[in-house]
Image 1 (cartoon, helix red, strand yellow):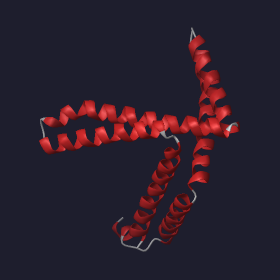
Image 2 (cartoon, rainbow, N blue to C red; image 1 turned 180 degrees about the vertical axis):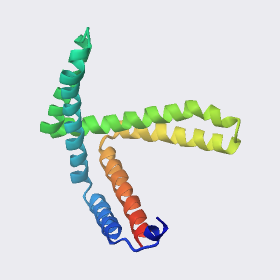
Image 3 (tube, helix red, strand yellow; image 1 turned 135 degrees about the horizontal axis):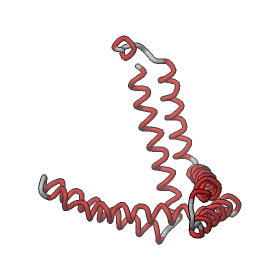
Length: 169
């Protein structure tokens, strides 16, 4: 195992370089990146609806709400796939709501850290409040979500790529 870690890994280097290139492409082209996020979310929604309808429903005695939920998932997925404006708004608003709920949860859970470290507690509170403010801004300005999501995707590819390059050398 140690010999493997100390050797040059050309595959890891190639994957790392490609990931950095994808990160740069995502940063330079935020609209196509966001469009791909919408397509992926639509496919997942359709797949989830089909899964609920055909895999879960047969095992339920009362499946009215599950059937309704499955059909709603499929309809939302199809709307996202074939109506770009709906997909953009749906993903942007979902992203903003995710930011707000996650930050509210972090704010509520900050009390747990209060007993361990006052500094960490205040850091949690400040970051949670900033997250709530950021989520509200994204909710009011859904177009900002396009840039934010594209930046987060790019940051993920960049971080992964740099890590792969570092581990391959």
